[in-house]
Image (cartoon, rainbow, N blue to C red; front, side, top):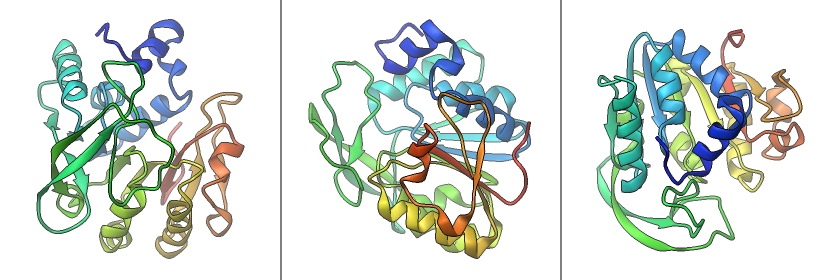
Length: 242
């Protein structure tokens, strides 16, 4: 849709590769070989449409900002993807659903990309346009039985992954995670998780190269993706597709 979105501007002018480079292509390839997919942080639905088009199994996307969720649903409808489950909520740690507060930044857009929870996040220096209350759904329930999980939740990734660590070690689903440089705790967690569960860590460049970069798990930190023009990594037990 022609929405007021930084994501859609990039796609309009530069195509799918214009937003996060190799990441959409890799996400589609991962979805193609997966049966039960969870996307946390759907925004306006670029990755949802790309991933659901390729998916062979079920697909659930979680997006807490009402305006973003409305555009996401519209984009799915335009592409006749009516089987995708859209949950208008935030993924949270803990066992029980509860309302949580979301900071919506002042990005000058109708559909912001940087909205984040107030508690338990590794983000700093974000502006505030408004703060809203949204439903929170336990990550443990959302992640149950999934074989592919994508999390782009603006700083709460470490808390969410820590909450489902036992599930991850037991089932070893493929993970696509946004890792911001300031997310030091997340970098440490992914390194330790990869060592414990036998994951390989692949960095997906957003520009400058089409080649993924495999990083030894023990040496991974939150600074590594940026060094390769990236903020997205895949943890997998086998080689990446394509």
